[in-house]
Image (cartoon, rainbow, N blue to C red; front, side, top):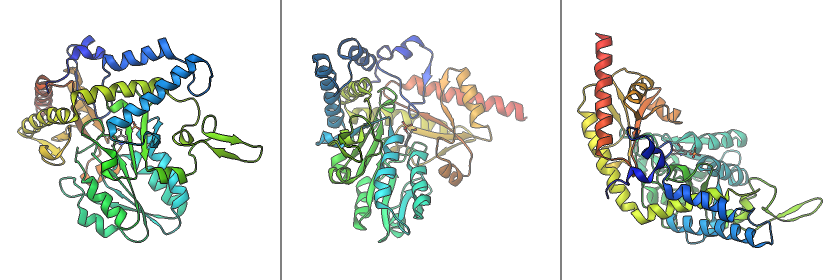
Length: 405
Ligand code: PLP
């Protein structure tokens, strides 16, 4: 595919010089998504599920329709098993808190990888501390990949959970999901997949992956902030206690106890983010129209070009696997230039990259750095953006070598 025209993205259209290379943090929003949100508020806004009047029925219908479209995009046949949350962080906390507290006890083991975003690390660490369970960390190979033999050695009869990122937000490494799921199921553990960096960039069919839980964020896939998904297996969700309690998630509230609504409502306490869901569905539709294979091919071209050209600059160190084994994420350092300084200099060239630990401090420790620079590509980026990145990095290197001289 060609890149999507910048004119489809009001923020990019309004800033023709801006080179946005921070889509792994959040993506820019296309007009179709903004229009869908506005259309919901202008034409169908009411509190879903609450009213008997026609307008509320319309709002409810749009919310349900959004769920069905997002489920179709993610390859989830039973859309009742797709719960709308605020995002990946909330989804993973929901699993660790609700499933975890009910199923993990003293002496049990939880396996995570060293590539985890804090959102799929800290909830499990805290659960382990609370339950006096053991958190085991699967170390990575030199290129950042997850080695299945190494993972196998960590699994046993006490393993309850294997949590892993489908795609690393730092290294872009793509995990062998089905093999990890088989290993987890082989010891009777559940497989929890952080799909935040996968759903926007790869063709994902959650049902086919075999994972027990899958989490993703709308804002990283052209959708609005404040909306994301948790997909879970029905028998697990049915058996789990609610995460939050309140309106909408109950069946009956007696004075001394309550019973719970059916899925997905049991896990959606309070007024739902219906406009967010409508916006996310519009984003999913757009990605589906483009085709996720085309999205992947486009990103591969960009990341490959950026990788080759940055690697050729003296002093540049790129972390993670070869470009063909990664999604559209490139973490790097330039000599001993601090990534924050690098990002500031690139900003003066209107190039937006991320600098920091990327919410992955355990991984940073293993890389032996406190921070990296990170460029990430998406559907609106093109070759000119790669040129701007490379030119900016060369200018920064030049600047610092003069200062150092
Ligand atoms: N997991 C990964 C791999 C991520 O990249 C991110 C966001 O950076 C998250 C989880 C958390 O997502 P959110 O902040 O949308 O909850």
